[in-house]
Image (cartoon, rainbow, N blue to C red; front, side, top):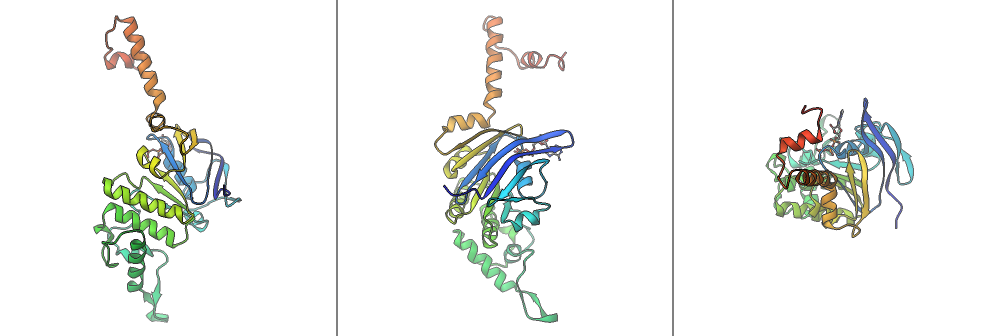
Length: 283
Ligand SMILES: Nc1ncnc2c1ncn2[C@@H]1O[C@H](COP(=O)(O)OP(=O)(O)OP(=O)(O)O)[C@@H](O)[C@H]1O
């Protein structure tokens, strides 16, 4: 197995006195898809912010390709080959496809005072890179990003990250807002990135999508790593249970059973369960 491209050791992140991430140790290797799973508020976005240089960890270390790394800004993370693509592709709806592809690194033509943005070249490259990812319906780089479908926007953002040399690609809920066909296309694009040797970190709530493309799975619960396993080591039911807070459901079932035992089989109403679970708040 190849050496980790990205390694986190005991990473903690607190906002003031609130501990949001506790002792996260994870590795992701070239050509591997790590699925980061967890319920709302589990700390996934915070972990992404740490990895993409938006926040520094409160403690713990990061290594890239075996060397210690610390990011003071997103630019720093990107200089280390880490690219993050957000749910809606993070692109600008009123920009052309070509300009959006090259934003911050615009190709130019002409010299001196005549130097200007090379719109034609930018559009051609953007269309070509999207085509390489299987997007064949976009043929005009001057079209506005706002007119692209969700899947096409993801392809544009992923194509851009790959073109500019990302070796760690973080995808934040890339399929969440997409229909089945488009989501499948985005999953194919993820597999293409994986084949190129890119390490992909896929944040998703969708167990089916995770199980389709994932090699390695990490489940966060309340900011801690509740499970870290490889493909085939857990069943779909076990993963779903972990993600849906199986623990909380088991507690609720136990409470209902206790109530029924004490009350001759009657089903408790929700306010009764709430009173038993939080006696102080409900008086
Ligand atoms: N700036 C902040 N200050 C204080 N607490 C924060 C801050 N940002 C996030 N949190 C808290 O940290 C916890 C984890 O949040 P985070 O957004 O990382 O979760 P998540 O797993 O990405 O959730 P979701 O799936 O809903 O996006 C939440 O309880 C959230 O309220």
